[in-house]
Image 1 (cartoon, one colour):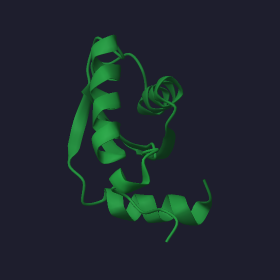
Image 2 (cartoon, one colour; image 1 turned 60 degrees about the vertical axis):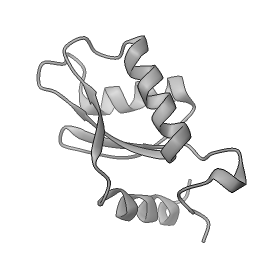
Image 3 (cartoon, one colour; image 1 turned 180 degrees about the vertical axis):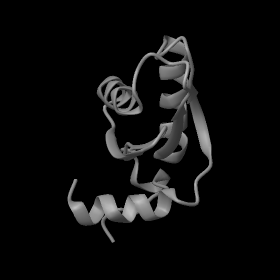
Image 4 (cartoon, helix red, strand yellow; image 1 turned 120 degrees about the vertical axis):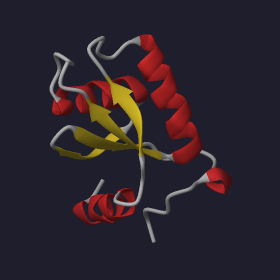
Length: 98
């Protein structure tokens, strides 16, 4: 992903609500399943890591991206944004290559 594409995704993510929360239990199968379903439907999600989590937001973002075959967009404070393009062009929500 180029810097220009990442900048566009960051701009789009500003209006997104946080829908994924990682708490003290860390990244379990339920969190991965929820993130996978959300990425399939939305292509891009914003998440938050609670203070009780032993992992840093960057570690959570990296781990989720690796497990979901997604790409990190940004990590700021306790929040992170990840992106995975839908393989079906008719179901794409976020147009990166415009």
